[in-house]
Length: 262
Image (cartoon, rainbow, N blue to C red):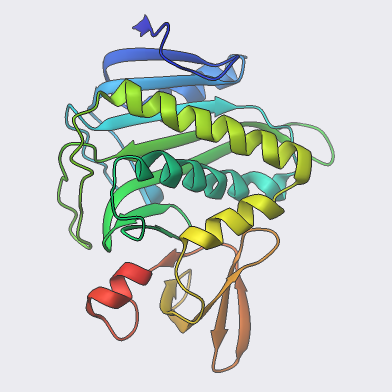
């Protein structure tokens, strides 16, 4: 494992690069539990056991970005999910420099970046709590996978890549600068500006969505994000505030337009 120097990182950040790891997030989680300092980023050129949300496998070929970052925000437990949304904003901004069409990239709640409706990147946010009462966030690990050069297939959704001639560590440095920026904004002003930035890159208000949680999928119209980052969905039985779940694609009504928006 090597440390990347002179790579345009924001102040106080460290970047390490490994040729191969089972999972960058698993490696950082072990280091977090051992007391590792925050603002550490870890790239693997190749992952052999990369994973996404709900334990799904994440293919990790050489040339794509396989990155995890360690933070110690020390906030309340309810803020854990907000860090995934913050990472989504930073990721969309970093990717936008490689995409000439400003409307091609959209965020999909809670953890995906889409390019013309197909998944181009995903975020897995994991956290641990302190032993205090009430408990607080001991650490947050953000695992971020980006299809830079190739788009491995997924069984349940289309995929895309940015197709950029850029080394993963160069993209990672830009991403970390945006992540550092938004972390500072949240530290000064709370989650509100992050929420607004996410909504500016999310689906249009009123878009038909289907959301899968613990029960059957729930259909409705997208009504924005709540103050805590939860998804607001207007259904035939009123407005629902969804804290955990997955937006299905395509949404109700199907088709490319629904997929792009959702």
